[in-house]
Amino acid sequence: MKIIDCKGLKCPAPVINTKKYFDTIEEGQAKVIVDNEVAKNNICKLADSNGFTYEVLEDGEFFNITITKESCGCEIMNFDKETAIIISSDKLGGGDEKLGETLMKSYLFALSESSELPTNLVFLNGGVKLVIEGSPCIESIEKISKEGVNILSCGTCLDFYGIKEKLAIGEITNMYTIVEIMNKAQNTIKL
Image 1 (tube, rainbow, N blue to C red):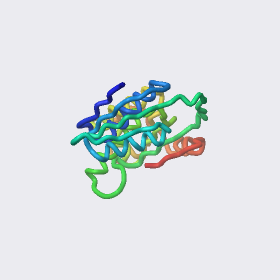
Image 2 (cartoon, rainbow, N blue to C red; image 1 turned 120 degrees about the vertical axis):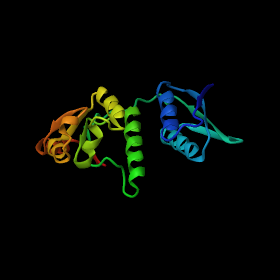
Image 3 (cartoon, rainbow, N blue to C red; image 1 turned 135 degrees about the vertical axis):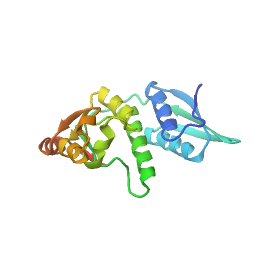
């Protein structure tokens, strides 16, 4: 049985490591080992959302989650919908700024590890701070870009913050193009 050792890993790494393994097999079993309740719950939610069966055993300070993926013999439909994600801040959510920065970095990392990527990732307002030199998110955004996602940043926003010359990835765009992207997309997500 495959062992996926996620002890000591912070969110979302245990879920990503587990999903990556199960994405590579048609059917099979693995034991995921985590050391906290949140990771255990997130792994169980992953299993539930994918229709996998699982069993959790607590072993001292660790949770051993045995997950089974069975082949359904069905074909997964891919609708190939065009999706745009609009990022308008360098923080995710309201409240504490440091937490917001951590959440945005975690979101972009998780997105970079996802098998389902948007067509366009558009950065507006304070979001343009994420695509400049020195950004803590640049590595994740580069990985997303290498998978064929268009990375676009508002030129007016870059000018407003005086950071246009520091743009590290993607293209500079304008509001007309951003409106076209949003109108054309079947799914638009705003962060």
